[in-house]
Length: 212
Ligand code: 2DT
Image 1: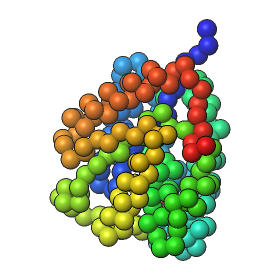
Image 2: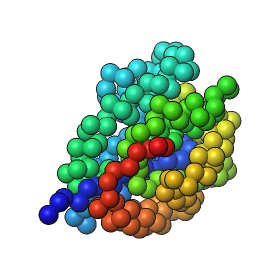
Image 3: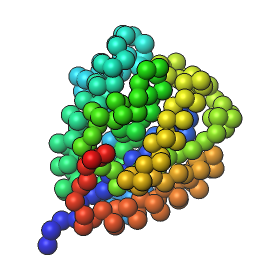
Image 4: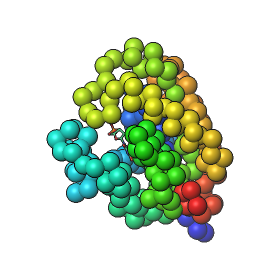
């Protein structure tokens, strides 16, 4: 009998949507139900490339905009062998941000087309499910101040939200919009239901290639 592969489940959204909280809860509930699952996050700040990205985000160094975009993409590619190994072992991956954040954030800067931004990530392992955690700007504001990292301003976050809306029109991706303005448990229940469906569906199908 061949092993059922794991699924790639991505959570996306603007800051303050609760992505990290929900990723952790999802991994925990899946594991509690005997479903092998692990969390990944991008940027993955622990690698050499990740450290460069992290100090850029903390405003400790400046990188040219195209360069940093390519570093974010390289940071995903360097994790691909590990992701594939886990998937083939039947472990589902719950991923906090992926190429969609990459495209939404860079294309919110002046002079960047969606197409140019997508190119470096073409062919990455394709997510079986991408959930967009949606909160409106007033709910995000109610959740408190943005942090002090680069991009954490409401003007930039609004521009990012618009780019996500464009990306969500792509029918080749299994997008699900989640109303994340509700309480943590209700949001979690929704996310869990979508995830179980995706895991069952992915089990006997090969891993796809993103945007190919
Ligand atoms: P966290 O606060 O979630 O660590 O995000 N970003 C992220 C990009 O600009 N490009 C990318 O490819 C990715 C994955 C979003 C750190 C910030 O980095 C942005 C917020």
